Length: 359
Image 1 (cartoon, rainbow, N blue to C red):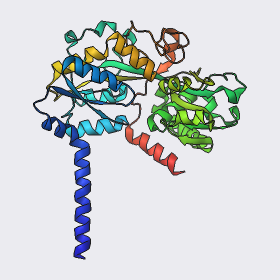
Image 2 (image 1 turned 90 degrees about the vertical axis):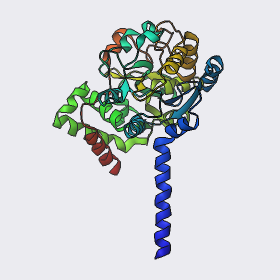
Image 3 (image 1 turned 30 degrees about the vertical axis):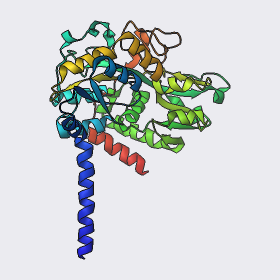
Image 4 (image 1 turned 180 degrees about the vertical axis):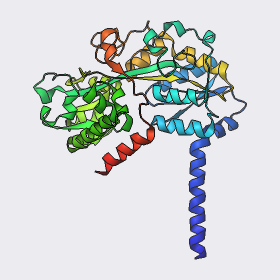
């Protein structure tokens, strides 16, 4: 009995240490390097080339510590728990930006310290999540659409419609679907009703649940990370995917295309914010000015496939580049784009997804 108690005690201690390390590792790292000229950045993978971070360190003498997260929910949990302590720069998606601003976890940005603010595309400013453009700097933007294996359609691009993933008679193979509950629910809503505002109606919410349950019969995998693998291996002819994922895939597989559904789609903007407890603003502004330099933006855009945040940069994934109208739509094509706004509570989204996965 005593041995069992001791074992349980050490298991509990182990998991407490793991949780503490998960939440407070940036603070510990900062304490260990407290006399160092450095900043800590919390970011998605595949946004900033590590070689360019090294070049920035050589150029300025500022050490950049990078921590990665895999979801907005992970970032939000860490920042809520630590009040953002230990981080100097974060880059969440638009709906998470809105939450961080509402909870006062980030500070206003001093635009006078930035040499690129007037180069950012106007349509990336003053959006719903930061209407006065006081807290955020748009950086990584992309759109949701469909990755297509043209070989499965006789070498042609099929009609651009969400029906390719919601109507079984449109394709002969299985499909790949996003594993983000929020995104899956809102894509289904847009397909059925033309706008995610319909989610505020109970009957629409029920119809969306039924559509996702029906669709599950021909879903091969729910995954954003594996969407490219599903196309490359020909396990699926169609996948719901972000434009950068397909842009990177197209470099190796010329039979792959990205299409924007005629019903409309969704824009995602990931923006830089400065946590309210950061005390290294001057160093952070130096890093931001470096990241938005034309040569640095161009490199990261072309390497990772996202759309350029600034007007003076051309590249394979830039809105002005040849063949990029689907992946980076502007003008009239962009009017069909919505954001994954918080129309319904997060708890409702989770309940729908848990029910879907349980069937």
